[in-house]
Image 1 (cartoon, helix red, strand yellow):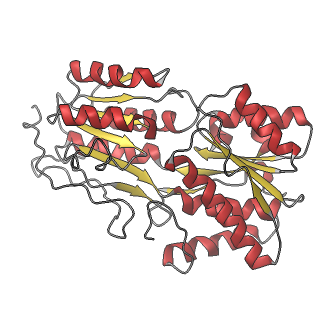
Image 2 (cartoon, rainbow, N blue to C red):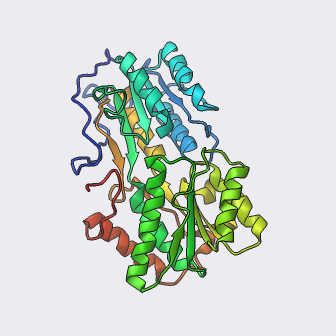
Image 3 (cartoon, helix red, strand yellow):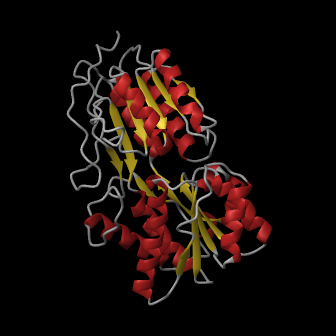
Length: 361
């Protein structure tokens, strides 16, 4: 049978930056359903990537995997389209609207304006926007009942990674850089720096974080990203966190060319698994549960349980975290993992406050 006529009757989106924001899990399936997905459906889920593409080994790929996972469970074939540049965003979204998509997932903060414009013009189409609050910053427009933010408080996980980086560093300098200066990029970078600061407070050290104001201008693995990483290495950084899809690949190349003992951190995915070329360099990765978040939201929408309450992943609900040390397990200090476990518990309990644009001020 087909899905009942879709409706958008929910209230306005809660404002980001207040303690009222909590994880919005998927609602239960309709009472007439006997499984987590409809028995049969004409529901059509779709997705638009940002310029990194679906093979970025990072957040676009994770979003795509979540879409495919949910679509397979539902029993439908999704439509996806990749963007090569910002000028592709609007026409790509419109092409999916024209193909009758019921839910369009857009991947990344960069698609915010295009997504909200489309949501405003197409109230009968549902949108899920990864990494943007989708609130009233679009031309003074009101909140959108048909747009669901999928957000992650990655500052919490990056805080732990920063602590680990400071503990591992022998030069006393760790670095970071981003693709573009979006909140969803800087949340990693600042959380990382705050973790380094916390390490210094606990250990009486003076590890420095450099590169907090450094951005490549895009999310491509290119010479600019490689040069940026090289500059950090030349300044003495022996642990580097690149934040911006595949730019970590350029950092890996820079480290390899330098011949120096520099560790690399991944962002979004466990890059040890997604891009094994530099497995010997990865200290850990700051993880973002994009795949699970997208899968949950798509499944709920297929069950006619779409709402515009933000989905927020954090340490408490395992929506963010850090990857294992993998090949570095025997290189890090013996007490590091237990210290990180204690830090995680203290962040969850509120004994340690990690500030971000998603947390209370």
